[in-house]
Image (cartoon, rainbow, N blue to C red; front, side, top):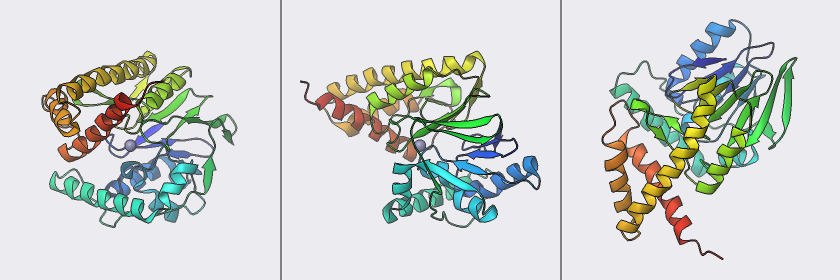
Length: 291
Ligand SMILES: [Zn+2]
């Protein structure tokens, strides 16, 4: 199992008789991914690209990969396929990838692939609970893990105890801070963590920055669960203090959570967007009528 490209927005490559890719990172890093994959595979080609979800920083190079390797099958959930077909979503992914490329250029984080994000279709719709035999001794189990998004699937390779959880677990940020990643539903996110906690995981691949091995894998899954609950208490406290005003609660959380953290960290605009979504999710949960 290899991390290809920047560990901040990695593509994972599982080598074998039929090599498999997981996620397709940012469009800006397309050429780094290509070089990294070719360095390992030489003239061989990846057979599948499994997408965890349709966020712009996980699908950026997919269409380029497909052009490079026409036999490559791009796989994702049914909801992921629906989102990829929506013109508004494609526009958003194009805009966000363009912005990311500009930021990477400004910070001189390596050569930037200048072409815009290009839409693509899924070749394979994966079903929750399905196990796909890829080659002898390598299969991929599809684990339904909503909460970060509704289209989210984690992928588990039982023979090698590898779990590509991406943002179904907390992101390990600079300074060791654990960023819970529920954006659409807190309870679904906690359920998803408990689902993957039951797997016997030896290699845990996160969405950004980190891979955990051995005992650290189970530890990170448990800590993700605790971090989500801690975040819930913090957000509820600020929402009550600010009488339900989401913007003001977000400002309070940023001061407590993001401001003290050292760089490099998630850019402010992306952090604020995600934090607003997290707090909105919690606010909806607090206002849900209990029966
Ligand atoms: Zn995401």
